[in-house]
Image 1 (cartoon, one colour):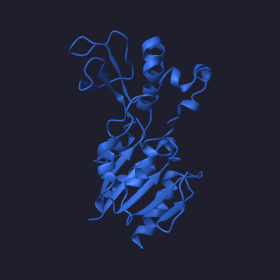
Image 2 (image 1 turned 30 degrees about the vertical axis):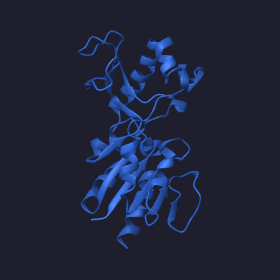
Image 3 (image 1 turned 90 degrees about the vertical axis):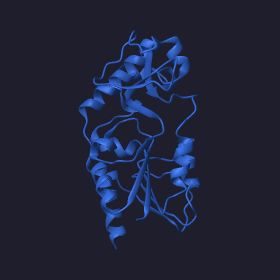
Image 4 (image 1 turned 60 degrees about the vertical axis):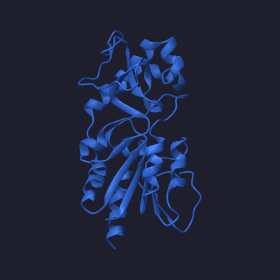
Length: 227
């Protein structure tokens, strides 16, 4: 069974109604992203950080996987699929994908501020100051913030090195270190890029670009793979 490695970004979840920081509007328009998504922000204005992620988490609890997520799940009948996602939502898992690695953390989880290995799954959208881990330390969003290392990168690079086929979907390939993962793929791997925009990659004979939204591009790709 061929190994298909998927690298997914924000465009993968857009059809589910997941809006990005830039599109959230309202109060968040007055903040630079680092003011709610960095260790410094957590230290200086923890309530603001909590409010931001609570709003995002509440939205996620109301969203469902879209057709693109479901098509990827169905491909597990034909391919050995691993998904590496830049997204912090759980829509891949809810659609039935069995091997998902989150590079930037998971919105429905919290972790201890004193022991990063203590990670908890949240059963509702609200995380509050005063919510503590079993060691008595404050819980924070289980998110990789700007300025923090990406612990999952090592595993992601190893997964990408095993790929026969690489599918890059819904990402502009402009956020590092995730964007650099494409360079870990074997030279023999064929790479498919699905995005309605123009991702930052250098065209080559082993790259096929499908300029469509996630679900439509996946339908086209599945037909290509069948043939």
